[in-house]
Amino acid sequence: WGFVLFSARALIWGLVEQVLHLPLWGQGCLALFALALLWQRSLLIRLARVTWVVAVLMVSVLRTTQLAKGATTTGQNAIWEMAHRVHAKYILEAVADLSGFYVKVAQSLSVQPAIPEAFHNELCKLQDSMPADPHHEVEKTLAEEFGPNWNRKITLHPGPPLGSATIAQVHRATLRVAGSDGVEREVPGVIKVQHRQMQGNLTADMFGARIITHAFAILSPALFNDMVDIISDVAALTKNELDFRIEAENQRRAREAVLQANVDIVIPAVFDQLVTKRVMAMEFIDGCRLNDFAQGASHQEKTKAVRQLIEFFAFSFTQAGIFNCDPHPGNLLITAESKLVVLDWGQARRLTEHEMEAYCLLFVSAALEDPFLLKEVGETLGLKYSEKACVSMVPALRFLMRDSRPLQTSKEDITNLEKMFSGFADFKELSDVKGDASDVMRGPLLPLSKTVDLLSNVSTRLSVNLSLLQVFSSRGYDFLLRAAARPGVPLPSVRMAEVGFVLEPALPTTLAAAAPRSALEGRLRARLLEAHGKGDLLGAQMVVLDSRSGTVLCDLAIGHGTYLKGRPVTSETMFNLQEISKLVIAFHVMRLVE
Image 1 (cartoon, rainbow, N blue to C red):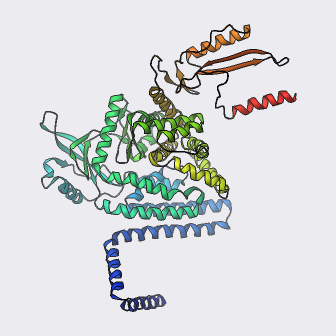
Image 2: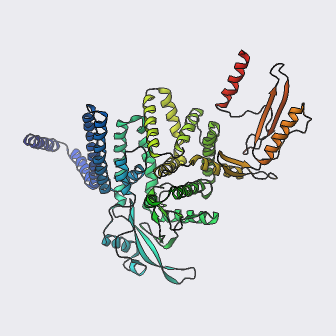
Image 3: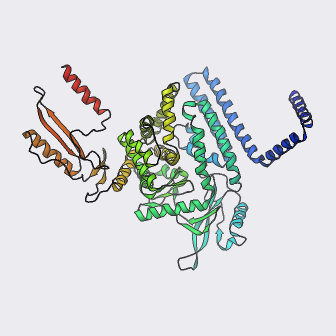
């Protein structure tokens, strides 16, 4: 310590001497720089704290790795389990102290199946149990927003807040609002009040988040190299949460869409007279938190709740024109009537008609494994996607919208995925495809990955097995059918089935009334027409050859290749068969060899 103090003193005096020898303009520049640092001291302090947290974790991880090297498998597991518990508690305390953007990141991580259970147990406490501002701070904010007589409009109930999250805390209150007749009435409700100093902290948090992502990129470059750009895009969404007027408009629009479509989802009504940039009043909904509900619910009840959640978000993307980008368990309630309540619409995305069509094409292209349909997504948005990017994005989309699976199986999937990407890290072709593909999910499509990932992880955490892609693609197909409606042609409907979704009834047949060339062709034509009429068959080609002579016994083309275009199937229509085409080719090659 004596040596450190001596060195520091010598360094400081050396710097002072250098500054004194500078010309006046140089000293002036240094003075301005010092004033800028002083003005941004809170930002620098937060950056220093974040850097310290990351440094401590990295050193601890490296130390644990060294300790585990010489141990047995059982010993390694025990060492890492203890390290995970310590690291999880350390991160929880650090994030709760820093608050702001880091809590948003931790909330998303808390439902990830890839993280160790110790991290899940600690980080899920951040969903709605953040340290709350004291009562007098809340009253100070209300006075700043509504004036000194704020308590004539709002009466806060005594006791702690109902919940305290990243941006704000929520209190029970009695609200005095004017009805449609202009008469003021007292109504039970809640008041959402933004944490003080939140606006100033967010800018520093963006820089700090980049430091964290760079650190993770060092530990696992294959998975985290692209995270810096993604963090920047997510930050733009997070900034909207600081203006409750935007959140109120989002919530109002989502509620209107739900009521008009008669969807069995609850979104609280907003009292517009009591909405400002930092305060928002809404009706009180009595419900149970999703995590608490899951502990006592049967598997059937949990499945019903998750199905409601997924169906609602499919409706949001394909019909409502607005969706919540932050569906973590802290923003979801279950009422006594088993209805799902969706809260916190600050981080929501409004969709234009073109963007809704693009999302629907995206879902259907993933379901059909059709990269050419994915190219149409770019054309709909006025963007140009390369075929190489679309080919690589289709399986990535299918993984993103994968069925929820048991928790341990999902952990193994993520581990295997990371190993696979690490093995390919040195291949230039893969990095080219990855670079092109990352552009597909930027801009209007970026919030999809975050939202769908949270939905899948919530389902996995509740041990519910549901096909997210099937629900989204059936809704998407229904939207595209309505968009492609033609005069005089009845619209087919989408029917869910065990094997997927079935479109019925079929479009009018265009099969020529020519006489069949054989009795076999007549019988097969009748069977195909029957299936086509029921909606079990959209379109088909059928050829039957005599294997000895090569004579054509039957050559049929019936129906349409797709509902979206309405083009009749002919003998020359090309179908996107994918892997099935290999079976046909292999069979005929074997016949030729024989």
